[in-house]
Image (tube, rainbow, N blue to C red):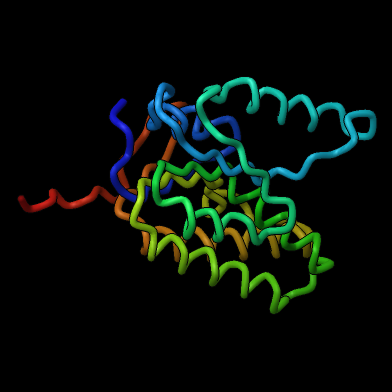
Length: 188
């Protein structure tokens, strides 16, 4: 596929193929920055999560620089600073989970709102190619727990704000990318 020239948001459900499809938008032979938002865990404590992270790492091109966002602030900074190469952020659901963990899952935590605003602002200002991966949370049932509803609300709000800031939005269903928002052709 042709490397992205715009800001693209890739949404999808669990195991929809969104991460692999988003990665396919980047040229494996060209430099890029891959922002990994999943926080590492002790493999002995959660071997399944460690395996998931390993699968994502193994799929990345050796030419891509990986930056891990361990505190929720790195992603926006990378978008602002690394305009020289394409940036892929995978995945915003785990990014929001980390923010909520840090805030003790408090409703209306100022730190979560501030991080969301900083990320949306960085995306809106981004001049280099960008691909964002996020889970679509608006198609399921209302979660039965407060934490589940909090996550759904925060990620849904973030996705809505990012969809406005991005030039293109795709929804992956069964590995198929459906266009939700397509960039207007550029005038020459």
